[in-house]
Image 1 (tube, rainbow, N blue to C red):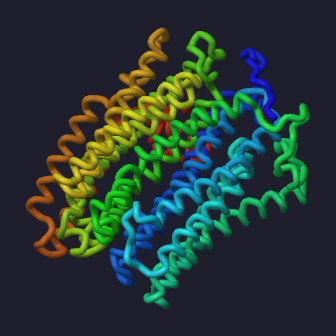
Image 2 (tube, rainbow, N blue to C red; image 1 turned 135 degrees about the vertical axis):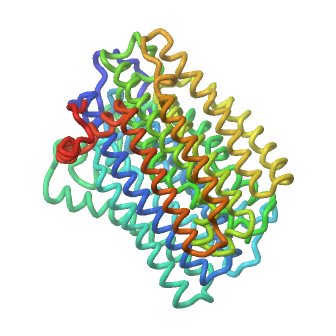
Length: 566
């Protein structure tokens, strides 16, 4: 049974668990969450990076392709389709009168959704419709990765409780510790029993999911046993289980409607995000060995994107959703919300643009060297360096798209979300056609170029929405976020210097020339940082203002910031 949809006047809108938090506090919470998420992503990606480096010396690229693409894609798809829409709807309920029971019940729907997704996708993954690998225990691997996803879905009610109450440290520790456990199991397994093949990766995956669930529920069990925090809507662990609200309803009609809209959007977004993996899996345009190499390049190329851009997108989506009234024009937003949102969006875009420019500038000249050091000739002698260079271009677009869509999805009305879903369908068709055509012409590089085309279209749509949203206000977050002319010139000069350095010094003339090439890059990077800190003072103050007070004081003493940060 559903509670009827109700319109709440802006003056009575409350946050579910944090109705006393101010908008200024919300941005600090979001920044702290993003910072800790960055720390988590660093740990996750570095451990994955090291893991692949170790595993490469004990298993074949063929097996890595099966695990890192085929099985991981199945696992990610089950999770994404089962929880992404419900997560967004559950967090969006923080802007209306909602009982915890409605939110908890909504998140428990992830489990039956996961069961259905696992059965359908698992059956598809072992059917003749999908390119099948010649590896032992593949069907067992499909089953284990589906079970792993289901175990994680049981944590969703606790996850949304953590998000709504800003228990950021718990989220970081849970994912980090679980991931470290998985890495240890896999590394020990492949080094001691290299012939065990896929079984080691199955054991590592189950270790992650079980550890993840135990940490979340173990924390709340101990926390509630010691105290009864007023900030939490539950008093015992039984309150996290499905139960009717005080009005005898189980769900909010608004939340169910929004969930369906987000689900249609998520279905298409998942395909657009991992489209090249679906094409590889379904059409078999690359061998599993090629898929393994592509995945290594993908992990290396996306490290900074995962470190910085994804945590920012996740944390500031929650910030914008808590500050803005969904679907309302600026004139109907609460006082100060538009100015704060515009300033935050401007600074976020400016920040990711600078980071992405640095990746594009230096990634081109150091791709070959990085791959040669990491994987030897296996990665550097083929199309690996070209893949990584194009991936730097893709990361630039990914950075812009992540921040713009972060704002757009928080500000869109339900009807606009539905309209965007239809556009996403068009994007999907364009991406599929581009990936198939470009891959046949250019090989693995075609996947990256198809992703770039996809990002360009989505960025254009998001920028159009943002421009229209702020058109009747004095704020221009898009144009205000562009780097200054000295910054552009500095990056161009740095690119010219490092590209010339690679041409003359790298990478077949010995380690002395390689070290000289790296030294030139370090000096050039330092120069870029100094220029950015000098010309982008507003950005520097914004970033410094999100740091702990002691760190701000240290920066003032060092002369990095000279005025009080906002």
